Image (cartoon, helix red, strand yellow):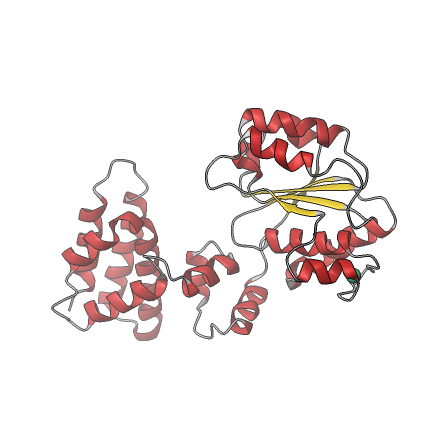
Length: 293
Ligand SMILES: [Zn+2]
């Protein structure tokens, strides 16, 4: 369990054990704080045959099936793009009838805001009159995008950010020893977003950025501002934030006027890049030139 969610987790499990937990739960909060992990952990508790306030026992048949990834009464509804009505109906159909393991049935919807209007309407009836022993857990980064009718039928939990100390401890435990508070800040203080970016094997990650910057600062002929600006233009906003963090750290270390000028340029670039229609490659080029040796 993520330490910053331990108190809400304990309160939810306590209520579940006292048979007073609502069947429709909604977890909202910014991206990268671990809402899905909390929902997953709670699902495990709901499915376990002998769960306690500490969570699932980890030993019963239900726990074994869940650990093997094939619990017949646990369903996650996901979709690459929008979550359509067919997918929702398919999910609801799995909740009808007795649980195969004789306990609870859980349906998890990680991106509830991706439901179409028709999909939301299809889910309403189940939220209003749930099938027996059923729990629905909805998660969203943008609660405003959910239909009011869905919101009014869920028990809502707005999950906040961990403290800086909690985030840093988490990242160190994950093996990221070199994360600064500024980098954490660049990701909206959301530790799981930092983790994703640092471990990402995507086309674009913090590692790729820092390799490029190192080469740029060293005056490497292959890593010229124009080339990097073109390569990074689709992630221009993120790059500007990382540059800002980089400049800030250097200024704090060396207290050189040059570093302050760069930092200021980054702050301006971050603002400029928020305007739609701006030439991102050009803004980045202007910014990266400042870092070139
Ligand atoms: Zn168990």
